[in-house]
Image 1 (tube, helix red, strand yellow):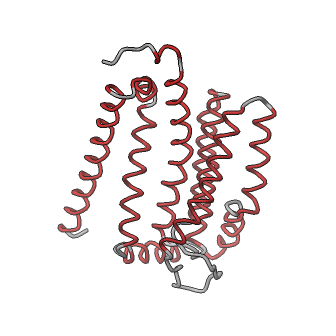
Image 2 (cartoon, rainbow, N blue to C red):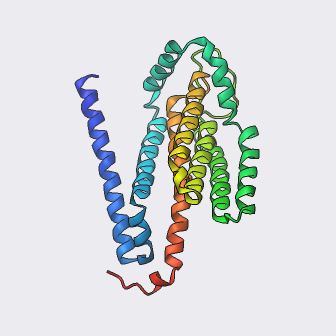
Image 3 (tube, rainbow, N blue to C red):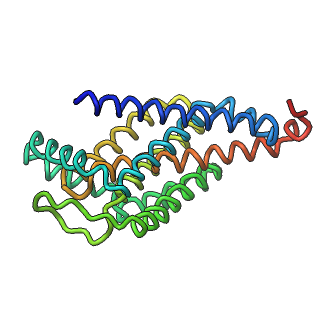
Length: 256
């Protein structure tokens, strides 16, 4: 990497970290002096809050680069690299994997899981799952319409009529995987590591499949992962903040 490019990369990382830190401090100050009912939830779930802020900042940076058309060379280089190192025999495998990120698979899976949680009296989890997937679908459509980015055309691949940014398959798969991790962890805490491992594996394979098949640019996938993790986490955190705000102890807690 050239010295100038390396310096710019380091500066960008420092700038993003500074944004995240300032946003977290501002949120804590707001909670301490204005919305005191949020303070405990923000403290207990500080890693989730920092994760949300990080996803917001990184996603915004990727969005800006795509809009400004500054990500092109890197996107092309990554796609060609994957194309060159991956044996052609893997294409059929990834074609099968990518189907698990399609609406035809995710919609019935979401309905089944949400109804299962509801029947088992886990109504919060049913809401988180349903709201996450509904939000992912609506936001995917809105961003695709707004950005209207062209699909990759580097080699012969399936043709898609919709906009490239963000990857809808990756977005929805990540949202479902993240929501399920949150739900399963809340109901069965001991299964957390297994749930996270399976979720990461599935999302990684779906995301990679979109690149292998030439359906998306790498930045489409990165943005989709950020959004897919952000939405369920945000919904879950907002429910925690609401619960803390409504609790009797928070109503009588003096401002500090």
